[in-house]
Image 1 (cartoon, rainbow, N blue to C red):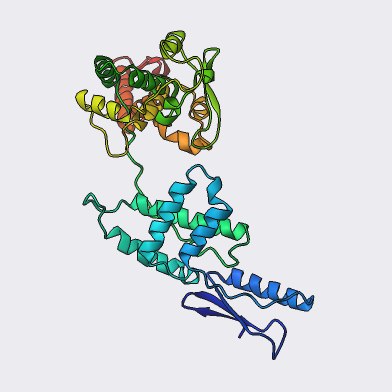
Image 2 (cartoon, helix red, strand yellow):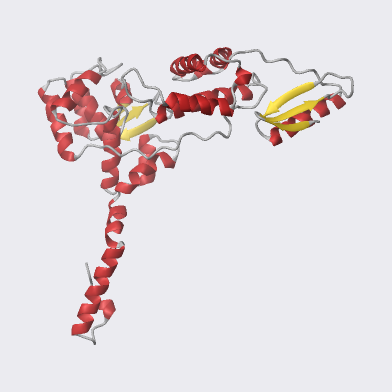
Length: 359
């Protein structure tokens, strides 16, 4: 039997060189992949180029090391991702890489969601989705580099479907309170970094690492960003002067990270933020008020440096036109308008209905 359905997928069982030749067994997640492997092996045998596949003895941790040495070291977050993959290997028991299957991952995922973090909170499903993405990307990259000659075991396995998170941003009065607290603390660097984030939509790290030579001609030039995409954002002359005042003419403008000082100012301003939304709320605040003030969604995409419009569309619902249409076109408003028209027509049957304006 050449191809048959087994518990783990579709198993190819062939002798490419014919009866008496070396027997090859390989299991794939899909029948199509199994058939493709069978055809490839037969074609190589017909041309005399076939060689018996090497046995795969590497464990999952070995793949992580190979991935990092071949590719991961080139990524900005390569070291961090390697650390997370190593931790994932430990939780999985560092099995043979060939034993990782879609089913084994789903079983691990269920067990992982039943665990608790060091803070005593249940593991966030989004954390598990990130683990899924990192592991799948590792296999996918090794396949492209031909270091892994089998299928990606997580291909086709869906991630956990999550509810869209609430869009958190600061209202104008909250912004004023925050800036007042930062000014009162006399930590001018943190105050200016905060203003830069609010004026440009920059990430905290991008603003904090800003160099003097990147501030020119009324624009802030952000480089070495999270997605490696450089962008230039105009700022007001007053803010540019405030950024330059008393700071170096070359090199880094700010000498501190300012994260803790910002955190304390948020607390003193009585602003409550969800976990993971401390300094990043400034970027959300810029984008949200940009759309509230009827900004263009495509322009916002460029300003934020998003790679896809889908990443920016979360802010579109704040646009005044979007909100006003919800007010004007809901069924209750339609009924009220119709009742107003009927009331006017009852009093004056000769009145042209199209001339009646309702609000």
